[in-house]
Image 1 (spheres, rainbow, N blue to C red):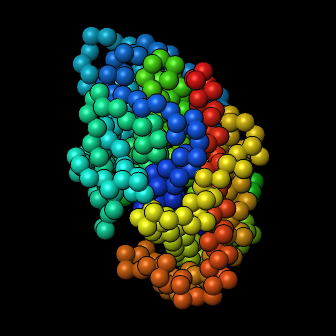
Image 2: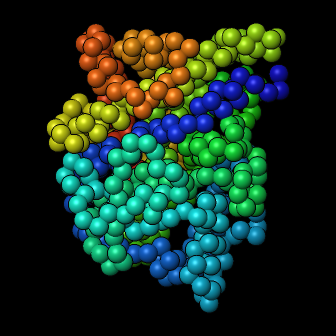
Image 3: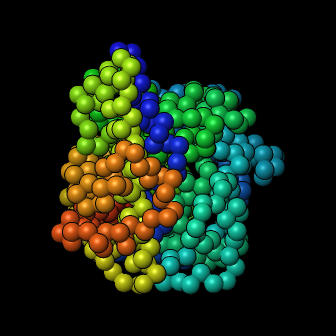
Length: 447
């Protein structure tokens, strides 16, 4: 079996709607890092436009981006080499706009990415009053319905708390940075970046084109990889490494604002992979079940496959919506729940190996993939059956009309408590791994 059509169907379905791993990453990032003295007690830094950083460090960036490419070629399986024409070369006489474009092209991120000067104020401690930016000033994607995002403008030279910089940037990769980067994308840049065709999903849908950079299927069975080799064409490790090494360089060269900003960007991909639905193809379903459903579909009996795809999508979306509601409710009420306490809890930090360039694969995604089967059982037991156990129901089309906190208040309190505890455990991992990554970046920068 050269190609597992079922896996393609699963990933196509899961990547056609904006299923972010943890909703707005800034909320849990604020809670996780406010417990870390190296961040919370760090002196304010001065906001600096990206163009100023690039101009000041053009030669060091040339060397760093070359070393990133060498690392990726040596360490990432199925890595598509960056076209030689995209290499970043120092050219002091060029314009700021041309230099910026060269930098973003060398990273192979969307060249229309905003990289505005802004923060997301912490709703727990700030009313976000003041000079607010429109959504489109920060994000190239359409504003979602019922958006609660608020962006406060910074000016060059403004002092800003590192906690605000890094927590805000932890959500930024969802603002269009990884959109339309493929040969078959409806963009000019995708056709020059060399990533090949989109490995799964619909290239005409922006959320599909982002998914391979925010999901990583690193612990599937050998049989599944043989049947579906495209599962290995995901690149969160690339992005994490690019931004973490940029952060260390920025710190070392006297640009602490960009040190913290790149740190937050790097954290996003690690945080995505603490979510089991981003770290494994089909949490709770065995390889045997996947192969059997695929075989039936190839024989003209697609019912089992179709039902599994709907249930996977519904469960993924329901989990993310529920934890987002819990975090937002706690932030706006300024009251702790078990989730906030878990995010701040540093007791687990020392239970993991020291941060390294392989930590995301060897520690983060390994843990999340292993947690998947039990999480699915807990989720199904707690959620209303119509939302997560009925393949005739499409959660994605009804999501805006559903309040899961209200719905789960009506179910078995023991089942809900078990789900809340499972989410708290996942977010405890989110917090511990985020702090360990920050420690690793600071160590690499000699801070």
